[in-house]
Amino acid sequence: MAKDPAILFYTGDFLVGTMRMSYEQTGKYIKLLCMQHQSGGFLTQEDIDFVLSDKDKNVLSKFLNTKDGFYNERLKEEIDKRKAYSESRRKNRNSKKKDKKDMSNICQTYVEHMENENEDININTKEVINVIKKKDLITKKKKEVKHHCGEYNHVMLTTKEVEKLKIDFPDYLDRIKRLDEYIESTGKVYKNHNLTIHNWATKDKKKSANSNSFDERVRIAEEKMGKWKVYKGLRIGYQKRMKH
Image 1 (tube, rainbow, N blue to C red):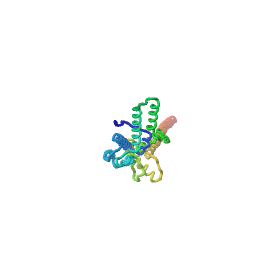
Image 2 (image 1 turned 45 degrees about the horizontal axis):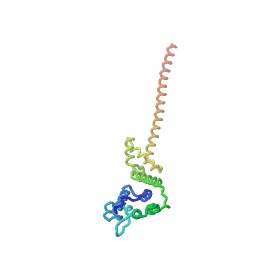
Image 3 (image 1 turned 60 degrees about the horizontal axis):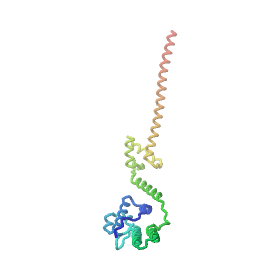
């Protein structure tokens, strides 16, 4: 009989089973499953060593090691179910009885051999996908390592955040130092030090604008006062001349 080119693949079960695997490990896992299916149900030690490394223990745990070789138990069950279905269908077609009863047997055989019997397991695939997305987000955050900055090492910034501060503030080192010393002296805790530095910069800018506005008002007032003094001096001089 020709090699079976396909098997049933339950996506929800697969997502749950690979929840704690990285994308690279998931790829290795699916490759080994394909190799097991195409090799007749078992993998050799050479197959395992070719695909997996020492860090892929969670992938290797999906395969049982027997004297015949390595195999994934769930995949073997699906292969056996499909073989049984194919064999029963072949026998039914070769039978001389071609009445409706035989056709009913064929349909019944399909149900018995091809359906997944784990009906009690109700997997919400959308929930599984949402969990995977959260896991990916957590993984990305973990990759962005934060470094201790400042004399007291209180300020935590990623390399990307430091580079952005360099662009935004020529005096970025002074701003980091200011936050670091403030935390050291007060013991205050900030959730996001990068955001805190930017917030402080915004407040400083507003204070500077208000200060400039006040200085401008003083200058204008002093200028007006100076003009008034000149005018008053001229008027007094004129009045004195008129008296003479």
